[in-house]
Amino acid sequence: MSESVYCPNCNSLQESGAMFCPQCGTNLSATTEQPAPVADQNNSAANPSQGKAIASLVLGIVAVICIFLGYGALLGIVLAIVGIVLGTSAKKEAPSSMATAGVVLSIIALALCIISFLACVACVGLLFSVESLYY
Ligand SMILES: [Zn+2]
Image (cartoon, rainbow, N blue to C red; front, side, top):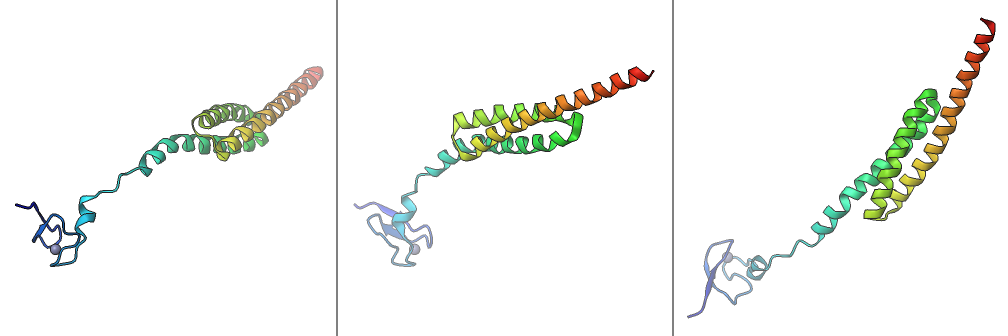
């Protein structure tokens, strides 16, 4: 007694050894052998760190813009620090050029924001001291 299988397409009874259904030509061996989802695991592991790398890059860019906002540079400092933390974390999980760019950009933005903020504070401080001389 030989084992039999049903064709998934036309539902006719076939011998298990048959590669193709003689009725409709459906590949019977392909329906039993399912390809293992290997690529899925790599993607799900890379995605969170890639998201962090992108966030780090975006935070770095926004922080650079904040340099020109005077006291907004304070916000830029906070964003740049978050960008550095996210970028370094992304680099540890999955080293990528995007994560590196995010860290570097955030560090540059942080330095420029601190300079800009201090310059602004000094400027306003100078203004107040000048005003206090007159009054
Ligand atoms: Zn068939």
